[in-house]
Length: 77
Image 1 (cartoon, rainbow, N blue to C red):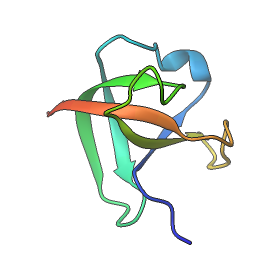
Image 2 (tube, rainbow, N blue to C red; image 1 turned 30 degrees about the horizontal axis):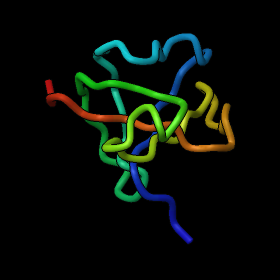
Image 3 (cartoon, rainbow, N blue to C red; image 1 turned 135 degrees about the vertical axis):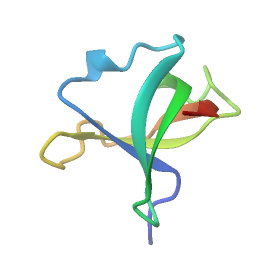
Image 4 (cartoon, rainbow, N blue to C red; image 1 turned 90 degrees about the vertical axis):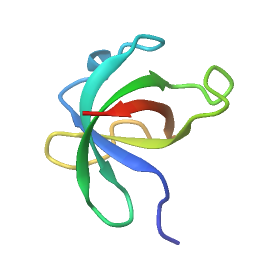
């Protein structure tokens, strides 16, 4: 089964400040199309129930967290 949602590449999880609007580059998990967005991030689906799945990867590609985070895109930049 293919992943849905988005992927993000970070050096460490602390780059994703939860509950704060951040500008980051993400990638569509199915098409691999990249885009820069302003978005909210959360490690918990309960804290961002209207968010989409976000797979957090290290800079070299492996998943940092086996569970998907959530992203709510505010705007594309």
